[in-house]
Image (cartoon, rainbow, N blue to C red):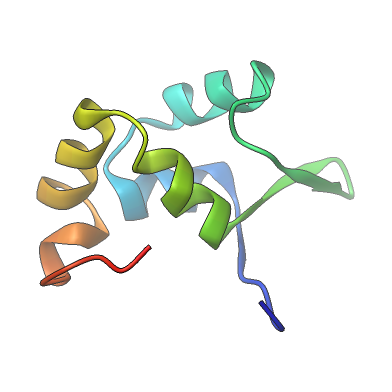
Length: 76
């Protein structure tokens, strides 16, 4: 990707419908890669989509509560 989009954990939570606590837990377990800038987590949007697509529960939350409710078909 030429211009990656970076998100905070709170914005990532709102976009995916997954709790911020779960996102921070995934960061701590190194399941979700992040960049740290000025002591703040920066999550690459593409990495967030890949991570949210790995488990059925996350897919359901993303598709029903998050950004997925506005997407007809994912092309990840």
